[in-house]
Image (cartoon, rainbow, N blue to C red):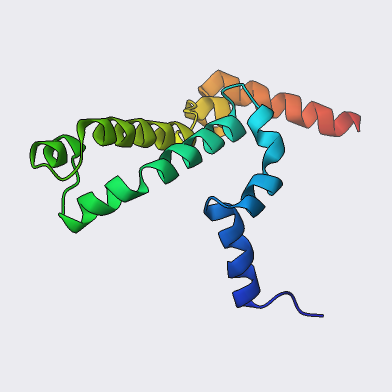
Length: 129
């Protein structure tokens, strides 16, 4: 049995990538999320980004990247620029990652005695099992 065609997969993806009644039905429970976790951040960013699409298109057409410059040149309004900034900030918050020290992730980055103790404990655990 084969999966759906690329056309069907693309059509399904479009349901959640653009504002629509179908997306609203699929994501209805997300509006109840009021924390600052991943899903809430993603949903907030989605709404902010879709709200500034027209301003972003105007800036692209003018070949501008800085919203403040776009306001100065009259391409977008100050309010649109501030909404663009909020959308960019929300997207950055969605994609930010946690930063861990290497030694917190793997024993190979620990200092000499710590590594020796880790492998000694590992050997003892294996011997006991």
